[in-house]
Structures are given as C-alpha cells and as structure tokens.
Image 1: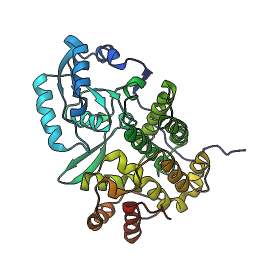
Image 2 (image 1 turned 90 degrees about the horizontal axis):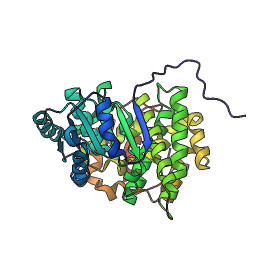
Image 3 (image 1 turned 180 degrees about the vertical axis):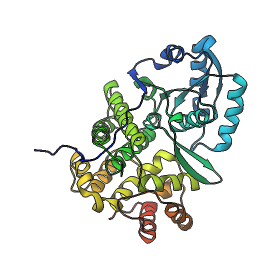
Image 4 (image 1 turned 120 degrees about the horizontal axis):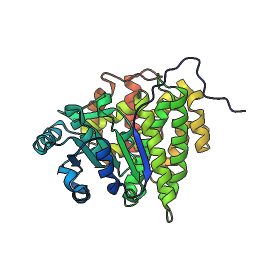
Length: 359
C-alpha cells in the first residue's frame, strides 16, 4: 500500500482567489470587473499581444479605461514605471492582464505599487498567476518578493487562448510549471496539501504535454495542461523555492535569458544536485515518469517533448560562467543539499553544453 503524504507537523493557509475554467474568457471579463465593484479596467499585454489587448479593451466598453502593451520578460523596473504613468493617467481602479508570465509579472508589479485588484487571463502554462510572488529586474539583477497584494483576485482559464501557443513555448512553459511542483515537494515549508497539488500537477502535465507536441491535440488535452499549470503555480504560491529557482533567477536577470526555456534546461540538473538529500520525497516523481530517479525521468521526458537542453542555445557563453556562478551562489535560497560553489560551477558547465545531469 502506498503511504499517505501525512506530516506530523505542518501549516497550511488557504487563499481567496476565484479560478474559472471555461470558454470565451474575454467575454467574461466585464462581469468579473463588475463583481469586484470596479468600473475602470486597465488592460496589460506584451507588444506581441497588443491586438488581443485592444480587442479585450473594446469589449469592455465603458468599463475600459486604457491599456499598456509593453510588458517585457523578467519585469524590468523601468517598464513598470512607464506603465504606471499610463495607469495613473487612465484613473483605473483594476487591472486586466492577458498573456503569459511577462504580462502577469507587469500586472503584479503595478498591483504592488497601487493596491489595485487584478484579473488575469493566462495564455501560457507559466502558473505565476496563481502566486503572490513577483520577480523584478533592475541593473542586471533579478530579485523576488512575496506579498499578498500581488496575488491576482481572479484567474480566467480558456483553452482557446493557448491553442495558438508556439510549440517551443508549449514545451518550455510546461517544463517551467513542472519545476514549480518538483521543488515544492521538498520545500522546507511544504505541507500535505501542497504535495498533493504538486503531484497531481506533474501527473497532468506529464500526461498532456506529449499529446500537445504530437498529432492533433484536442481541447481536453489543452485543458489538462492548463489544469496542471494552475496546480503547479498554486504550489509555487504556497511554499518556498530552492536551488532550481535561484539558478533560473540568476541566469534570467543577469543575462536576460528567456525565462521558461531557462527553467526547462536547468530543471534536471538542479534536481540531480538535490536528489540524494531528498530521494524519498522525489521518488513519486520518478514513479510518474517510470524512471529510477527523478532527474533521469525529467531528462528523458524533456527529450521526448523536445525541450531545450543547452544554455548555450539560449545565449549564455563559456565566458559568462564565472559571473553566473557568482550570481547563483550569492544570497542562496535554502536548499536540502547545501550550496557548494564548485559543484554549482560544474552544474552550470554541464547545462551550458547539454551534458547529462549528475548528482
């Protein structure tokens, strides 16, 4: 019989967040704005999704106050300041974000500065919409904070908005979501509920992603992936993260590497580094992927769905490694295996060229 996830000591805090899975999410926004007792919604997107933002703003009619289509990867502070100027000029009383992690990040940064409630419509599997966590970049360094003011009040999930996601983003954002759940399983403040969500989220994505990357996926496949991403994101919002996220924040903020792709490359390596210290907690991950170890299962799964495997393909060079090690080992996050500089240097050197992950 499989043991339960019971822990003799734990704390669990539920959060007030409305989550809706359905269809035609943009048409539901007006009702959600009104339910928040708001009347002037400000729409946020990336430049690539400006047309979707304009369409959404038009659909809001008198409830639409304005828009900003400049969200950028890693939430640069200078972009937030420009958006804040537009937001204040619009005299908005709520935020509506439609897009992936970059858009959600900007919406959160604006919410932190203004206290405005957020409605988020995700178009990727980032999962950040389910968290009170904000990562911001300034001066080549990415820092993170957790604050209840940045947790969106409403999330609207709609498979129609992810069906057109480019295949490489399907894969990389899916691996990004899995990373949230995997680290949640050995978080210092994990609890049985977060672990249940983590394992279910990994199972859902392990099931859906191969179907999304081959053949003709159905709406149910897209829906299962969104469900998995939501669960994994909820885990990220419940517990602290460890080495994997520290490495990705250092690489993303320090070298402007693409967020989701960096997570996809780093995940097997970070898990291999940590696994010996928490093999019992990661055994269910190995079982999900049918492998001897979690890092081997993640490596094989990543290869199966065509995930990126080399930091060099994302823009990092061998000359960047010394600074990358400095950033990765400065102010380290808690991790089950202590952070050892030489071991981190070796890990990043393997990830640079795509060598197999090692303990």
